[in-house]
Image (cartoon, rainbow over all chains, first blue to last red; front, side, top):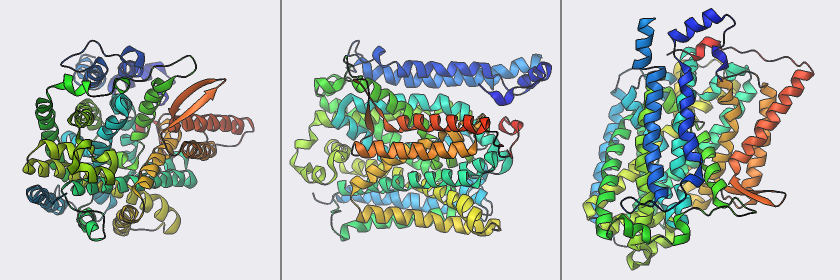
Length: 89
Length: 514
């Protein structure tokens, strides 16, 4: 997907990838898209929570979940977790 | 309706506060404001939290606060598309924006069209991007002023006559003055006040109003049963399923192509600042969901049938539902706070939009085609004047042209701005598409999208019929498909007949800096 990080020399490519970031985790970003776009899975009333039909509360929960997924991807690819891996190598 | 003195006093005091902040902002993170980087991007120094407030103030505008609940009020569940829309935005922006920031920082790009100019070495393609951005932004600024007008009307000021326009003109003059002196620093500082007011208002409203109305169960029960869920597909029609999904996807793809989103993006201090923001920006989407539900609360409260609101509904239509609900549910002083939150919520994006449009004009039209030898100081003074003209144009629009035209044009703006996606977003990843092919795709997409929007009287949904099967969908997305197909076909043809590519003035490594 990210063609500009391609490199002709595989050894060089792996060194470069460790120095910058690990973009493989970016595939996880498709998860919120999948759940948000699959309308038939949430276009229903039941189960209700605090009087909210499923359609409404489920999508609000998805919003919060999206924040968590992006946070996870950030830490795995750029943040703390990724940094520890870099120290060891 | 009588003028509410207490609410108006609170409203005016809060407006005065942000006015002082707006002028004071010119000293914040002090630097000479004589360069476009400082005036128009605040020196690219905003950290995570300021960027969060700025982007929040930029993307969730006063018009959003009025129009989204009004849509649920009128159309039911379909209006909730704003929620999946904001779910889709941030994963996408997490990937794309850090690349745009990195290359722009490296080369000193102030606008997305600057980037295109260098990436494809094509002034004409950059001009197309700049013109699209300006066209899409102008009606958006006008709608912010409409947002202010509705709340001023809600305070009991008669906004129908000539005299009635004076409060709006005053708000506009204040906005224009501090944007002129302080540049992007002003909306960034005001955004903090605006967000505190908005959060306080919405959280209070979502606790107090359901208590009055007997709980959320009662509120949802007041929504007509056929509007509570989306209309499911039949054998010959995808109905609201495809409309809901395409509207969410199309709006999400378009959002960060708007010049004002780009300006806020480029003003942040780094690629990681942006990545962290994509983690915390969904907090605003939760807020948006709650705001949307105010539309149902207005239904449950039955504000439309109350005699004191008849005049407001007659003048502003369903857009008056939320102001009416607030007046109906709260004491005067809180009405003042809530309306100030909406009014200030209009000032922040209007300022950023006018700065963004001014940057585009200065960099990609004036410097490119009129005077290539501008000094940084001259460049900044041209941008300042251009930002005044943008706002003045928007004001004339609101004063003399029916509001419905501004709404129609804003819808067209969405259809237009998404047509720069192949050039800008795909351009961040690959140079494969030819710049002449991109220009041809852009023309096709603009024409197809405008025609579709016109043919359905400027409603967002165009129904595509394929051998008897109907697929209602967002015209912007359909037009984008036309655009992409044309751009890809034309590139293939140009490659086949061996037409040479234009130069790329950027390097692969420019996109990866942290």
